Image (cartoon, rainbow, N blue to C red; front, side):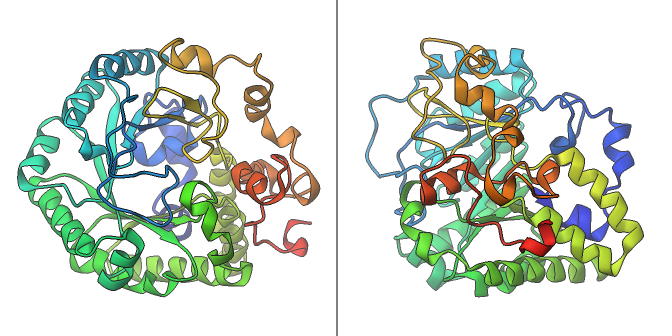
Length: 392
């Protein structure tokens, strides 16, 4: 994650992370990316079932029940292990996590164990009653996915009315007093909607938005040709920075992040270097703390069937199953060659990544994209849009 509002608008300084000690158990959620111990944030895809048909779904979710999901009892055993391991955040995802009736029970149990529980949802199932329940159990955050305004969103989600239902879900979260934010996956067909997303942030007083670069996984692997070109991506990142700054300067700051393309960090720094060199130097220190892509180290994934992955997109390589071995044991077992490499991936990247001046900040970006396009896990990420001159 690259905090556009933090880094570009100066809402967080390097001393903030240092002041909190940089221990993930002590850091507030908005500074976890700067932690020194890097206990992983865990995405738990608690179900494969979903009521929508999103064209870019990395999990190949379908609206049919699965018979191999972790049970409530198994889920609580997983949570016990994650809590003891020191995992700071457990993100419940899917499919659509609210398709599981025991989601509130599992989220409440995570909160009881000292973790921050958040959910990633399409928002369509968040009724007033559900929102009140989520607030009561102490849910930290609800991220609701939008692909644009009504026509575009419903087209991407494959179900007419999905946009209106998501809007109602946002309203219900706000009414219940739950922090809610938007999740937007960027591609050729919806990038023009980004100004409308910012307009929505302001009109509905939504405090947070995450803009995700497309990852070639699941059904999203079919959209490689529809991904933005490097030139288009640069324009999009510039637009996000500009719109974030406008809100900030007008006294209506929002937390804005870009996700899943760590070239955004150096790109933001290079822009700041021209506009505000003094501030750019401070941002560079934060980017070094962030360390770029953390698949297999600072983020991990547990699937509905208990399989453990390096991240939620890397679903074709499992390191083991929590039904037979605790997550904490799987995650720290570097006898697995790939797990060992992911703990220090900068040593293994090839090509322009290996000699890039920003390797310590980016960590080679997304290995899943590199593998999807080239077949080589350690090849350069094809979505890196920095020029040869910028990385030299």
